[in-house]
Structure formats: structure tokens, C-alpha cells
Length: 404
Image (cartoon, rainbow, N blue to C red; front, side):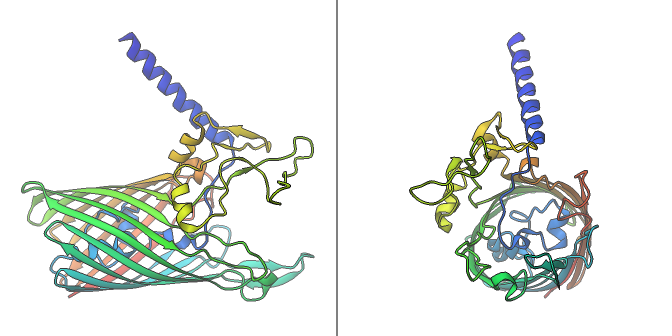
């Protein structure tokens, strides 16, 4: 008994130490191009803590797990459209995300196509002398197609291809250029009943495996797109033929290499250049200027385990690199209550560790379905205490669909 008390006391103190250390260092996020690809576009999943990899199939399965399309039940064709409106308290107009989706069931197979258009708040452009050059509103879009096949009664797999376009500053601004990328997804889905009253579902996907994006015509620097691993599970409790409660859990992680900590001169504070390569000397972590596939593998072990505190000093996390790797895992949990197959009530929570951005929010939503027509809406409430730091802050999503 005494040993158990000592163990839990030590565990509590370790957790408190890690939390305190995370609060004392600057945020160390993993930055990518076109982050809108990871913004939950549809009202249903966004209301459920962004859980979508293991939920029931719908027209927006493309964004989480294309393999789910093969499990569309009694729906041969689904057409959906919707939008997400993001609140930005410091800028106007608000960022907006528009989306359209189409899915067609063909025997054990399914095909689907979707399109997303994202426009963020206006950016003020200035030259090197701080002269005002006007404003530009960045525009980005993605168009994708998918194929899914159901192997037997319980399992399906899917693939998707995607074209991504991004224009951040307009053509010609400091040699800026429009950026393009080609990407793909691989996914799997498993669903089966456990007795008469419980359905189990499992999902896995790796989305946006694609080429880097190049924004400057005179620079060799290229940016990773947000390649993401998602793993999830769901349990549906069927109270009767027309009423059920679904509980979903999802874990997600960017498969993008972490930024290393650069060595600095202890007296001047300037970065140290390696005389042999001409590149900055890495003190902690790994070189993140690698290929896409190497970066995906490296993302599992390359966390430097150190960061800058608010005085600009490099400090080590108590849990080291392992602790930082754990902080790269985001968690979502969501609930959906089905009332007579006509009304749907949803809630969820999304958690991103503070060290990697701290985007935490609670979400609420509802939906309705009558005949071939359905509609969903959701609202996101940030948990962050600092206004304007959460990209999902006070966002509203709405979509409608027709299932023939």
C-alpha cells in the first residue's frame, strides 16, 4: 500500500512537472503549407470533436477515410454541399471554407469526388521599406477523387488522389508564385455487429501524401503539406430499431518532420554555420530538409526534446524527446444520438497539447433527415483562454445533402 502511494505521488509530480515545463516554453508547432486540408470541413464530424475516420459513411468521408464510401447503406448516390465560417476577432472579412461532395455506390465499390475552396482573411502587403502595397486575400483549393472497395461483409479499403492549389501573396510579390501539389490517400475501414445491440467500427487512414509546395521562384525552399495519420474506433449502442448512441475516439498525428534546434554562439547568440556544408549546425533533433517519405518515417522519432523559453534560452523538457513526440498526438472524442432516424444530436471535444499549438475546443451540433434530404449544423467553442489563438474559434459549419 505504501509503495502504491509513493508510485502515484511520483506520477503526479512528474505530470505536474511536465505541464509546468510546457507552460514555460514557447509553443513548438509543426508548420506546413495548406493547413486548411486539416480543417474539419463538414458539420457532422466537426460537431463530434473532428472524429471521422471510424464513423458511419457519409458524403464527406473523403476528408477522413475514403474507404468508408463502400459502406454507404441503402444510399446509391449522395450529393452534398456546405460551408464553414471562421470567426477572426482581429480581422475582416472572416475566413471561409466552401465544399461540395458527390459519392456513388456501385455494387461492392464506390466512387467519390469532392472540392474544397478556402479563403482566409486579407493580408497587408509591404515592401522592404515598409511601404504599403495594398492587400491580398489568399485563396486555396483542393479537388479530389476516390475509389473504395468492400472485401466481404466487414472490411473495405480505399485510395484517393488530390490536386492542391495555393496562392498566398499573388503573383510577383517578392518573387512569390502560385504553388501546386499532387497528393494521395490510403485508408481502411472495418465494421461489424457485436451481438444485436452493439456495432463496432475501426478506421485508419494516411491522407495528403504528396509533393512539397514551392512559393518562391528564386528560393529552393519547399514546404511539406499536412500528411496526417488518423486512427479511430467507434461503438454504436442500438436501443431499438430507430434510436442509437454512437461513441467515437480518434487519434491523429502529422507525419511531417519536426523543426530542429539550431546551435547558437553562446556570446553573440547567432546561429552557428557548419563549415563543411554551409548549413546551420543542428544541436538537437534531425535535419528536416528531407524527402516526403523519409519525413513521414522520421516524424516518429525526430522531436528534439528541447525548446526555447520566453527568455530565448534553450531548455530540455523533463520527458525529453519522447515527451515531445507524445505531444504531437491530437485526440478527439465525439457522441452522436440518433432519434428515430430523423433527428441527430452531437457533441465532442478536440485536444491538441499546448506545446504543439494548444488548439482545444468543445463542439456542439445537430442534424435532421427527412426522405432524401438531410442537413447538419455545428458550432465550435474554444477552450483556449487567449482570444484569437485558435483557428477554429467560434466557427460555424453548415451542410446539406441529398441521398437517393
